[in-house]
Length: 339
Image (cartoon, rainbow, N blue to C red; front, side, top):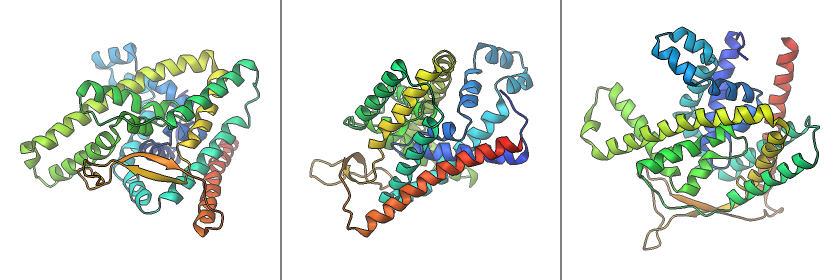
């Protein structure tokens, strides 16, 4: 499964990691879709499931080079590097555009998911009773998740660890948005906004030689929450990847049909035309998080007005999103032909 990679391949892997990281942070969008469409999903799952007892034994014995090679370290390292860069750069840009041009951002993602459905389904020739049932189950679960009501924020460390396991589902299960699941669990703002910003601020202060955060109990508490969340995410990645590797190996066609269903069902989550429902305090005022951002509860969907110019601009962004995925498909085929 490991490949010899050129410098260009390495840069592209970091870019793919950027795309996965950005997608994972947007509610309704799955980083796994990026992996699936960009053609490295199976290598991603395969590499993660190599983090097992044998890998830990290599570390304990000090055989770090063997460990790096065994777990496909160059692939995972570059991909994770891209994701980390994304959380402190592209994801912040996305936050800005979602705040200022929400309709167009959702439209582009809606188009990308439509393109993803086409990409995955176009070469799937294994439709029979079991795969059709799997498709329907995937669609129903995807739709059902999109209409659940969010819970209240909970910073209990055991629950935060569980959130970490659940949040990485978007990376391992295309169509299932880990960030949207965190909204349903009530901890999206705490774990993907407040804690990430706290880490960013802390790193910036440390670089500048400012260690005053050590006296800030609130900052230390949220960093502790982030550490537990990260541990849960790492645990989820490894355990889910082992399960998925087994399922892909033994039930590949059924799994693909479920993934197509998941992605189709998730269209309801990223439907562009929706009104944001914000969390209110006892006086009816909109609540804000520690960074001044409005706390989102859920969305109320509606059909667009066709006599509105904004609607047609949104349609153009949907087409743009579809074209992005088709371009990725074209690039993947071109790369294979060159090799």
